[in-house]
Image (cartoon, helix red, strand yellow):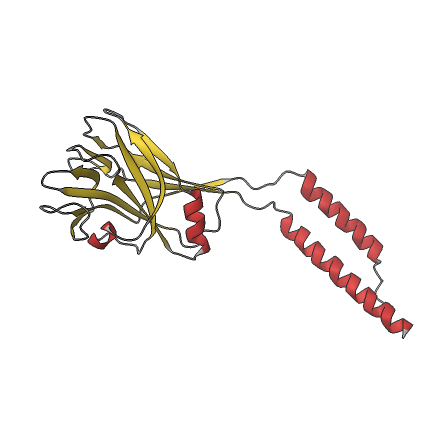
Length: 233
């Protein structure tokens, strides 16, 4: 004969489980994924025509260049895409832009735009629809990296089940003859390109047991109620 387990005993065991989940520290640790770019480079527009005319004329995967020349009127936009397939919502995501070539003669401002990528860099990426994430300044002679918080954008892309997240860095100052690169360099030999640093905190190890306990208590309570109703009939 199978011994009966009282609901009270199960509730007691469940309470102990709750306490263990709350009191015991999680065995999981935040994990950081440093993702190299799937594709990178720049798209150039308007060799002899006004910039932003929608006629992307070349794509260069060896230099993440950003410039805006008033004469003869050309603009380069740095473009990078990452594969985010399989990611769940993240606690933080940072786009890291290394300054690999600084040809500025005065401080300049740049826009960071986000778009849904396709896994490749092409001329069409020059004018593809994108949303503004933020902007930043770079001064003359500045080195190091620019860190851009893109958490909200990455989580939005994950929610839409998009496989590729794309970013564009665009000149946002009055036209000048200055140039800058956030990847690659003037020798076209650098492999230092933007990265996407994604941090996700795993669930506590006991949380699946906690969820299972909730389901078990609910099931037993329903069966007990059904038995009581049958006896009363």
